[in-house]
Image 1 (cartoon, helix red, strand yellow):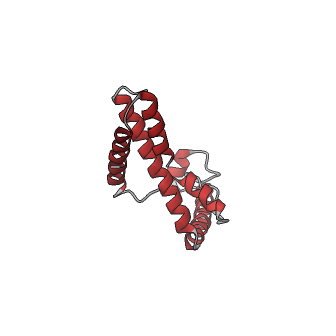
Image 2 (tube, rainbow, N blue to C red):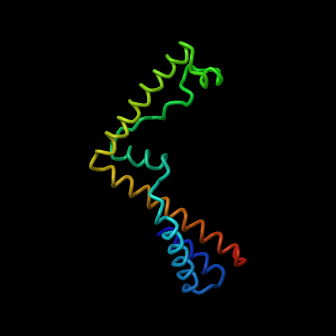
Image 3 (tube, one colour):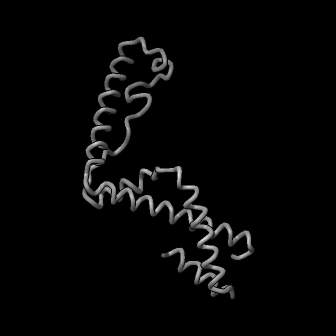
Length: 141
């Protein structure tokens, strides 16, 4: 909706007809929808923020790779030392906890609503970017 308003205002300021703005919006929406057909992802941050609005607890961050406590990358790659084994055990534990929290969040009845909201925001941003890019190509500032 904000994007349509952007087009209408931009078109009015530039002396364009409303039809040109609507056509540009429709074309950008169509291209965006085609691009998103095979992409069922949403950016994590907007999804997490939306989940919070529904009161769904999500893990703060994924476990580090290499796991915390491993300062030497060579040690991490070798994997032979007791320090590595302890760090890797800790990493696996953190990863299991992280995955369990996300699994619990996905089981919430509001998870899909939050995901759809984040997906719609992603789509709207892509449409807006398309419109701005196309307008710039047409010489509209």
